[in-house]
Structures are given as structure tokens and as C-alpha cells.
Amino acid sequence: MPCVLRCAPFACLSSGDLRSFVPCPAPRGGGHGVPGRKNDAFPPQAVASLLKDAGGTYAWADTKGTGSTALDLETVLSKAGDAPTWLVVENNWKSLADVEKADARYAKFKAFQDGNVWSANKVLGPGGGNDYYERGVARPDLILADLIAILRPELAPGHELTFYQRLTK
Image (cartoon, rainbow, N blue to C red):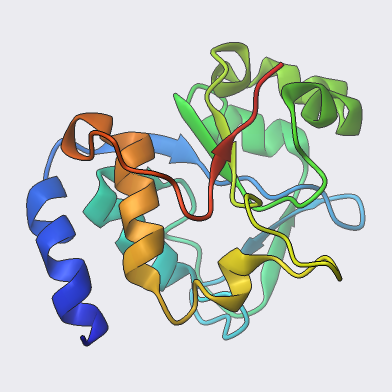
């Protein structure tokens, strides 16, 4: 079934009532990389679209240009520190303790304080490959279903997450 047909029912169910969240990647080289809209390696317009369909907003959806913009943590906190949900793709974070160990300042995020941090690292291959990147590119409907279950759980009761897992203490 084409992706449009697989995704469409979810998009119809989730339109409206946007809830913001912070997609803040783990630091790389001293900054938090925020991809520009024309970045082919990580097309944020696709991610932003999935998030909107799931009832969320991408804090940096209006970022222009190509490549990534490095932001310091203070900038990220000032723009999205109050977001109720934090979604990341970080293979090494299995718990909130891992997040705080990476940088104690992450505990300042509202989502961290509320225990609402999710990482798309549920399935990792033996060599460390992340199923989110390996299968998710061909199955955005599965990513969308996970995002709906996280951001709008009332629309997906009983959904078993495919890629994401909540990070707990």
C-alpha cells in the first residue's frame, strides 16, 4: 500500500490541537545541530509534517538553508525548554539518568522534569544500526503512528510503539 494511503487515516484523525515538543538532538561537536529545511540527509520538512499530522510542532520548522545550524544548549532551552514532550534519536540514552549524565543541564527541560522524554532507539541492530533510520525511511506511517501515540495517546489506545520508547528513571 502506498505511504499516502497508510498515513492518511492517521493524518485525518490527528489534525488540529497542536501540542509542541522539542526535538533536540544530543550534542555533536559542542553544539546541538538543527538541520536546515533543504538538508538532504535529514529532511526536517518531512519530520515537521509528520509531527504536525501527529498533533505536534517542530520548534525549528522555520529554519532555513542547507546543512545544520549549531545551537548552544542555552538557545535550545530558551526556545523549547518549556515544551511538554522531548523527542530524540539517541542510541545511548536508555534512561533519564543517561540523559542527565550526558549533560546535567538537560534536567532543566520541562519534559525531563515531567518524565516525558522519548528516544527512537527501541530497536538497535547487533552492529548498532537504528531501525528508525533503517526501516523508518520506508515506513513513515509507522513513525507517524508512534508520534500520534506519544503526542495524542487518546487517538491510539493500545498502540505498541515501533521505534520510540519512553526514557524512565
